[in-house]
Length: 227
Image (cartoon, rainbow, N blue to C red; front, side, top):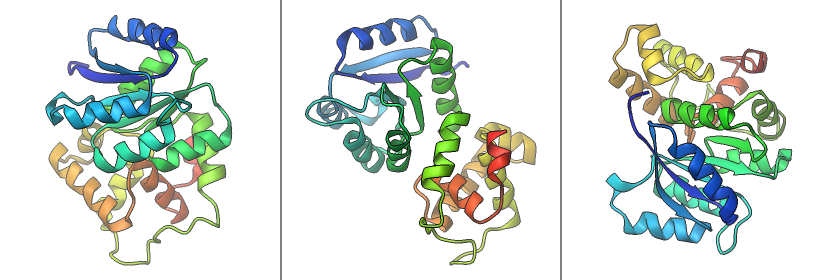
């Protein structure tokens, strides 16, 4: 990957944070642009810095003083929608994972993960906008996709075009915009337009919202996602 990935690290455990920083800075395509010990420091930094200096990805813990990871993610998802969040936490229970994904995290990684899994997650989130392994996908299915959840249906409002459905199905397979463009013989800009239309028509806030929408409206099945 030729592009430089700008990353901010947010964790109140300084030793752990420095260890992650050391690991990531050894990679030529990764640049650590900011470190913080809590969510409030992060939000202050984002408000102060120009948008061109913002990180592409923020890796943050859940339990932190002043402003925890969940509340920080809500703010960032609302005020800085172009920044992706990777939750990196020792809390690996279903409720914590489901909550972080629900408020806008693009990925969830346990702190006992391997360095290679973390690097894979970073690269996938940078390329595709999100990354969910089989464990996280199963939790999304169990906790977020249920009869009690009633997002906008395929019969409510504007109908999706045939092309938009094709793009939606490939998004669910975690194809990048470039891969979708190649698969459907489109330009990347056209694919981005279809993705924006999908978000607008379905009233979803992010890619996981589109996946949930696709499953609940039977464009794809859960089995196709977790196999």
